Image 1 (cartoon, one colour):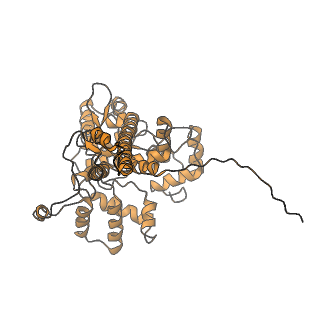
Image 2: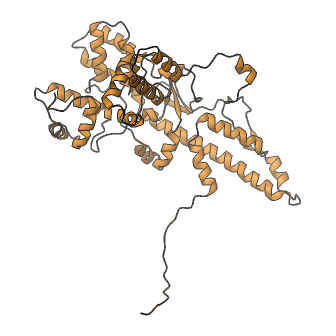
Image 3: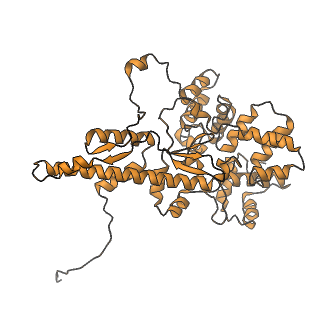
Length: 420
């Protein structure tokens, strides 16, 4: 056996993440109040950064003497938990209710699936038990709409507590859950054959007047400040980044010139501070521009919903945003974290306005698919199996797998064909 030394050359690409790039990425996922506090801390530490507009910025710092004289803050979880304790519930219902309450987002919506709640409960309670507690207990707590799994259910829960006539109740259900209606105008023109125009208009006004973020009426565990706002415009939407109370940064050029004096023995340390200041100013500007671009695209894609013309979100995913803006999906995910849009109906998280399509050939949201499944099952005189549902829907171009139909049928709490 002969041992030889062989020289080989290999060429490969490797992404090196510099400390500054890592810090820039971290800036993207900070909420508005978090980045404002970070900027203020940098200003105190770095003399080369100055504020153009020294506006007063709200911060989570508290004056102990002032706070001692204020009443205890009422947060949404504590308010709901107090109501839960007043009910005569079993130990299991209490545990399920507490987990559901802690899983609600700031607006009061339940944005995670019931099977995820089952996992949080360590599988000690079934999905059916969780659903019963959600629909029979949590969704009956105040404020109305708490525990809704989407905006349509939220509006329906609020209107169920109003003294509506039978016609209005039927109208509300038709407008919200009929998958044939593209928007409110389409629903109105279609329903004129069955209902008076005045009654339809009154019902639409009730729907549009509902609060889409009932949970934001309470003190938030985390301060919420929207980054983007929708301004009134004659045509469409005018979306802008909110400059109010956001530090406007610039470099102290006079101090920079003094630091460039080569006779200064601490010149190297000062140069590092100057570089840090320039990086922060550049990175904050880029972060705000990216947040505005993402918010603007989301608002444009969901214009009908935001203008109050429909309660149905259009299919929209991280990947679509990334392709449109020529950004990486990971960048979009970081941008969506803790970012809010100020709408005429209150602050709404950017993430809540996304709804990925469940089909690769048609733009169909999970909510639209569930409505379609429910309608096909209710309209059919036969007990349709999941395979039959797949065949019927795929003939219409949905291109869905059987497991997808099963998943969303179970979400609708519809038993299989043998048990129907």
